[in-house]
Amino acid sequence: MRRTTVKLPDDLDARLRHEAERRGVTIADVTRTALEQHLGAGGRRHLSAAAVGRSGHSDVSERIEEILASEIAPSR
Image (cartoon, rainbow, N blue to C red):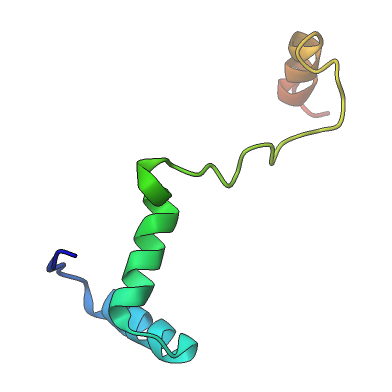
């Protein structure tokens, strides 16, 4: 395992320390977990927001022009 030094603004450092204390783990553990979540474990990025906009309608791609037109139409 390699050691890395990171410079943090005071407010972020305080939040990091608070989170580590809240979880009962080390600052390094919280930092590693956050980096793994952001970068993805094993170098593969996890897209946690995938399918967040799923509407349940199967014809959205066919109706995209109609949908967009109704969304950007001037409100009366």
